[in-house]
Length: 432
Ligand SMILES: C[S@@+](CC[C@H](N)C(=O)[O-])C[C@H]1O[C@@H](n2cnc3c(N)ncnc32)[C@H](O)[C@@H]1O
Image (cartoon, rainbow, N blue to C red):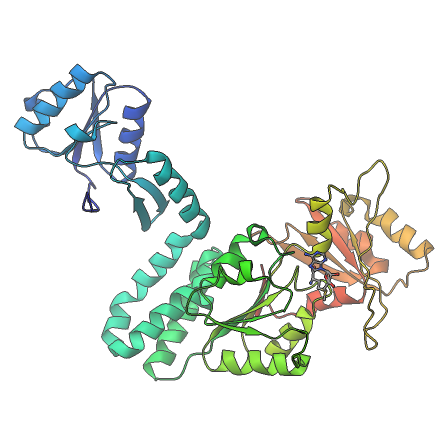
């Protein structure tokens, strides 16, 4: 290791930045974001550095840089000179900033490009609101240390960070996260075994780079991954090394799992406290039996979330260069099953884009096509975003329902499945 990584508390302390160009501005901004009192000068003398915690030099001129560095040395103030590691006491790492959580990356000055590449990967791994999880942990630190045995603490922290409380914090509901964490702290104190959680996750069409960020994060958190046979090795390779991989799909020459057995397996693992990812090809709710698994977990009173994936129709169309609704030749897409299961109902789900402002004419067209006016409908506005709003009702009432949804982007789902939107208790299912 060429440099020892340290995190420097600059809050309220004097920091001098020498220089005026872009590199100097960047350093001044960085020091300010750590709470430093920043003084920006064009040149510096030893007297200017009295009471200074650190000096950043970035004049862009070797002679001026060297002069400023010497002044810092004489004043015994640690100095960083931009792009001149040989003149620097410390170097600036590439930074991934998530409020309380900060990741610093250094290649010891060998390759800033490699550091930037690594930063990009780490940025993708850490959800935007990761700092909220650290704040949540901070809130409970003293209590957990006081109330729990060391053995219980590890399980509590892991569950707080990876479980429902952490996930709520990531969604921006810090008050809800604290409520759950408090219940979990109480449960841990009474030595109750905490429940696990199931995530019904879409793996996309097969290219690992088409996994969603959320799916990739959950693969890194799972204790167990129950996956379809269609999910390729390249995707399973993204799982946490310690995760138990269980193929529950149909594979030639091996007995396949019955749906009821998959559901029982999910339930027993969540009851045992595991974080279980049920990894399904494409999207779990498109010809995927994901809804049955959600129902089974909910009926058992267990927490479950759903993470969508890119369904095969969209993945294949993009790969083949086909725009499914190229407006010059098409205005609708139909997803059908060739192998209609004998126990499947024959209902038809219509998903209508760009329709909230046209709700009355959409209703009239569907009624003219013979669709029952009592058919369930759901209008979903700002879907998956923090300000998501859902209305449900009957086709006959579509125009009245749509009046509430003129603000954000929305789409309309028409069909018997739309009734499910109303029956899912939000506390159990957060469709992400
Ligand atoms: C049981 S369905 C699951 C569909 C999946 N839930 C989805 O959203 O794509 C399995 C079928 O999806 C299609 N499929 C899944 N992945 C595919 C891929 N990478 N290329 C082409 N078809 C695919 C095939 O028709 C396959 O028989």
